Length: 253
Image (tube, rainbow, N blue to C red; front, side, top):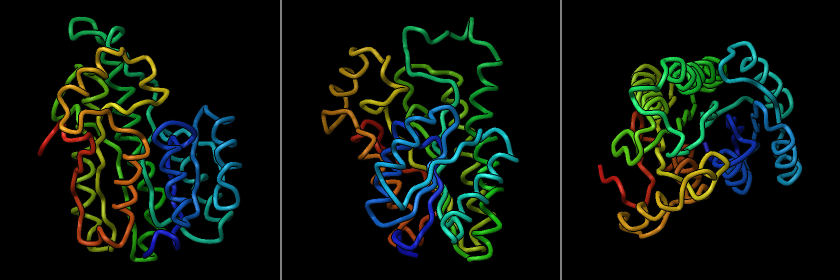
């Protein structure tokens, strides 16, 4: 299915990478459901900027019933089923190396928060869109991961653990859903310049990335969005269960 014929759900799309993905999909002619949790003003402004092909809808990805309602409202709004879902939502985390707690002090509750946002959120998204995708015998599920799993430049313990678990979820889902015509892949970025979540990252960390990355620069949200588009396009029709690292070559895998 071409991107222009699709209805795309993007979680956490009111700002940062999610907003870049929403703009990228809309530019290709897709209709976009902009999910937000707390960023109502930004999400609605983005929907107005994109215009008719976009609608902003609130839901907490950690709550199954809210995701189910959101999908129903989005499909009713566009008169068509969701065919691609991008799980991008980031719950209560910022990339602040100076504030990051070490293993001696980090709490299990912090791990639970990231596990819920990453894995429980992904499960809720998948379960909300599966009926539509199975009926179409087509679906594209795209999880947003991180290259910190392979290369922890900063030991963000709880965040990276949640994303590592999400990679396992991605591959299991790919195995189960393949016979239904549904692919499941992950796009893992490095630190992005800049988003709300990375706005507190110190210049020193960005400098380290530039110095050690083959492309000698920090990846942007728009460049990440390009890879997300690939996994929803016909060009990726034979690709599932994969983790594509988009970080300028910092991690080669």
